[in-house]
Structures are given as structure tokens and as C-alpha cells.
Image (tube, rainbow, N blue to C red; front, side):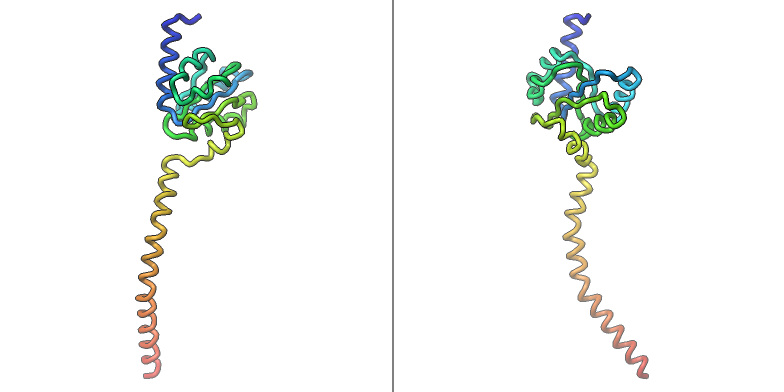
Length: 175
């Protein structure tokens, strides 16, 4: 049995994490073994995902003044909460990959930046690019016009050089 102070500490901790999180997922873990939950926790920790099993009443209190208050009505049954602290798709990738081998983990609620999504949106959220991938894609988009301009400006000079070389070769062949 948790004391009032312990409950308040849990609520405060979850609320702080929720305020700084990019996305949140609540998944039912009924039927998972301790070893499986330990593996899920390790994977989450390695990916920068905050994972916590919290009583639903405490979770509702913690989410009240955050962008994830929209999840409160859907918190029913034994749930594990996963918050993406570093990038929006991290928790979704962890849950998706774990659920592939453990069908007992069932996604119940997904929220992205305070907007409630359906559990079917897990794959879309999981395939979002990481920050580094998004930056590299942006850089490629920005670099393409510059490269095209450089090749366009270089083309007449290259054509002139090839023409002069062809004339030189023709004169040498005639002589």
C-alpha cells in the first residue's frame, strides 16, 4: 500500500515528465512476464523513453494540467505509460517493436503534442523520422537547388572546353 506522500511523489514525477514529453502512449500489459517487462524497460531506457506503470487514478491526476489530459478518460485497466522525451516517435517505435514479439502488449491510447490519436496510428508515429533524419532530409532539400545552379553555371564552360579540345584534335589530325 502506498502512502499519501509516495502517491504525491509519483503524481509529481509523472506530471513533470508529461509536461516535457513529445508524445505519450498507454498500453495494456496484462499477461506479460517480469522478464518481458524488464526487457521493455531496458529498451525504453536505451531509447530515451520514460516508461512507468502507474495506477490509473494517479495517472489521471498527473496528466490533469499537461497536454496529455485528453488521455485521462481512456485510462482503464492495467496500463504502462510511455513518454517520448527526446523525439516524438521514440515511444511508438519501442512499443511497436516490442509488440511484434509480444502480442500481450496492446496499445490503448496514443497522444501526440496534446492531440489524441487512435491506436491504429502507432505505425505512422513510429515511422516518423528522428531529429537527425529530419535534419538530413532538410539539408538535402536545401542543397539540391544550389547543386543544380552550380551544374547549370558550369555547363557552358564545360561545353566550350570540349569544343576547343575537339577543334585542337581536328587540327592535329589534319597536320
